[in-house]
Image (cartoon, rainbow, N blue to C red; front, side, top):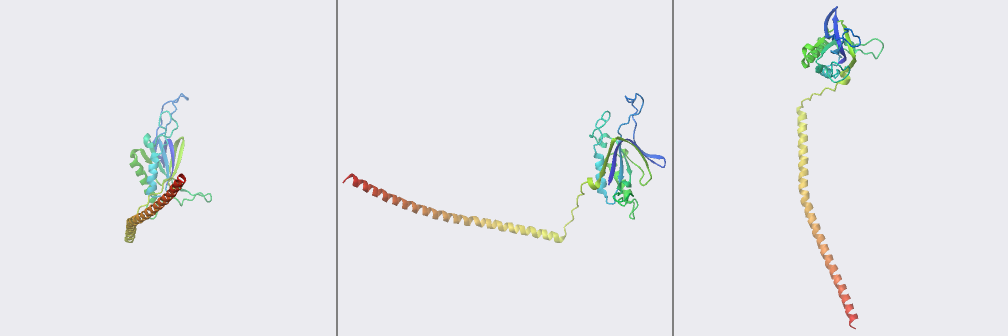
Length: 265
């Protein structure tokens, strides 16, 4: 869904010379500069033009309704602040006027004549698809906000739309580029997929058990080998010490004999 959103001081929709919807009011306080009773207009709500494409679903409709109600496009100070992006239409308790406009889905990439094949038909073979989606969008707005503050034009009619844009503030929302991808629903597993999953779990458990058994055996063998190695090293060290001691004893004996010979001729 594609929407053109305008912050307005007033807006109205006329069909066949009759005003069918309007929002906003005129504050009759005098302005200081003019020193007359020139009406002073303040922001009073949102005019939202809605275009529905052939690929739109209830997900795009609900996303747009939530996004529209949450947009921070109004100043916090209603009396003195001209600009500011602090309050939403819900925060400020303003009104919303929605107008269906299939021309928002026009394709202008080729030639100079608009191509409207991308717009959802209002009377397809299966029923009033676009009309139903537009009405569902309005009901979603009324449910999430307040029913008495949401107005609309006349779907499919030639309308005269008049507005006073405040600011001007005009924004464009497009579900095709701005909305996150819809969540994918999980499909239930078939009997074959369940069996494959059980087989994988059993195989993993078997491999884990085998690794556990191998680990339990390896430390025992390793310990015996370590003990044997330690015993062999200890035996070699002991023999070496004995041999070195005997050699040292012989050297000392020879030295002693030599010293005695030299001392007593």
